Amino acid sequence: MKIITHMLGDEVYEATNENGNTVKIDMRKKEEKKALSPMELVLSAVAGCGAVDIVSMLKKRKKTVTKFVIDAEAGRMETPPRYFTSIHCKYIITSPDVTEEELTKVAALTLEKYCSVVSSLKAEVTFDVEVIRS
Image (tube, rainbow, N blue to C red; front, side):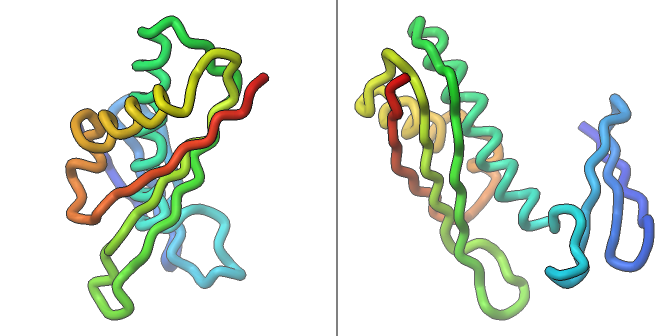
């Protein structure tokens, strides 16, 4: 895996992968920001990695997922380096046939075993679930 990151301006960068896909990285003040910061990208990577694994496991169980939202929040150290001290993911799924028990089981498997992003962090990662029947 390789990423090339270019500075576009003061506190604004663009990262490009080997396929040419890009993401902007923005370290400006909140009111000036037009893209995610590096730590926001890490948190979104935790959410995205977990989501991909969860949906994959549910589909292998022949379950239907019509909508999936991941609400991720993180706590950070107050002083530099401001690393994550905790991450909480709330998985909200809309499905006619997924149960909270099933979602809890696959979410736990994802965070404890399969998600490479979570495995790369030293933060405690927790979660809860919600199923919305469609």
